[in-house]
Image (cartoon, rainbow, N blue to C red; front, side, top):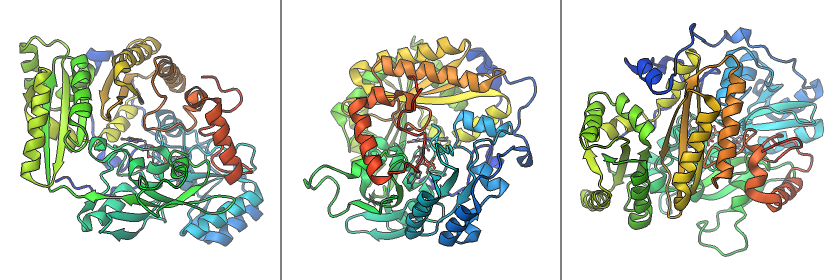
Length: 555
Ligand SMILES: Cc1cc2nc3c(=O)[nH]c(=O)nc-3n(C[C@H](O)[C@H](O)[C@H](O)COP(=O)(O)OP(=O)(O)OC[C@H]3O[C@@H](n4cnc5c(N)ncnc54)[C@H](O)[C@@H]3O)c2cc1C
């Protein structure tokens, strides 16, 4: 069984987690990238500047505002230290990292505040209203859409409200299999407690080791085992949120799906991205921890056949029978996953070529089960379905290799950035009938916007009605990496909207997708959101510049 309680240090300011874990590409990695997409490292390495060389703006927090914040949390928990401001100057998107790595800390908050109780959060919000200070809630800081960018808006100053001290699991109810968790707990911190009761949340996004319960909740996160455990939002029972107009508690009397007492107001908080309040605590539904984990690898003739087979997984096998982790790589991603898997991967590619498959698609699965009989039954159903689609079984070591390295991807990005390579991910979702069309349109739009580029894609979240598409984009870095990023982001986002997809399946809206939100939820949706915000945050101190469209935005 994988150890999901491993808690690495908080991310270094210029990359992911502990920089000691960054590894170079394996032998053959660079020639392969060059061959596939013309991706080459820069002539000179591009490491981050030294911490002291990150340029920060002057602190604009007034003495009286600082004193008011310190009166709530204590002076030692209000920081204007260089490192704290740099660490909270952005999230982990390519442009956020690029700016900091090149010494641009112009977006840093004026101060970072670390509350220790829910009550302190409420009191801090009141102080910030009084002193006209914008507040940016900060969980793990893993946002890849500009969600934690410290935007001042019309306010005199901006603070980053870091929730790391609110990291306890305060109650586990083993009978109802629920737990009350403070918002700042990182995935492994919470999971370590659940496991003591042989329970699990089953929520393992690739950012799992850094992201927090509050972050998952307000961004509508989806973990790698979403086929088994659902998206995070499906496991939220209740929420406590501090707002400038008072605390709000939603849900909790019954399981969320077993009441008809009016609209489901809990959903207003889920996906609210820190605009309506600061989530301080949530009750989450847990599941029994599996006793057995089993991985399998299969291959299909091509991506289109893979899409049809995965639709069958969702619609014919369904929840409880289909594997808990179900991931289909398109042909491009199949090429790189197989290359990374070493000899078994190369042998697998050989096998597919021998069958005359020119564009095969790889499928990796993980079953989590309580007993061997259930596992056997589910595996049999999977095999029968896949065989109907002409799939062939590959060595399980390929899936095991992928599962074993699933939290290592972000470290590889740091290595690529050290070598001046452009690397970004974008994601969307649509209905099954539109999936191939959307896949092809987004892929083509990215390619057209970039020239030589490597674009690979996978499905990893599926349901009765449709599935997500997740693209990784790699290219040689240009002289203006931010302009390069803007070009690909605009091309991909526009293609998603035009081809009938959503602007985000699980990364959220933040700053980067804000320009498309009106197209997605319509004027009615924007009006409702603004009305709720006006009620809970009438002066608008909470997370300016995120989620809601602003004047001048063009989608
Ligand atoms: C390498 C990498 C891999 C990723 N993989 C996945 C994945 O597999 N699945 C997935 O869904 N996402 C993924 N993400 C995106 C990101 O990790 C998620 O959006 C995550 O849920 C954010 O959690 P966080 O605690 O880091 O939130 P933060 O980044 O700190 O904040 C995200 C947003 O929520 C707000 N916020 C945070 N905490 C609170 C709170 N308590 N109350 C109110 N507002 C709050 C912030 O202001 C911000 O707008 C990935 C990101 C990276 C960098």
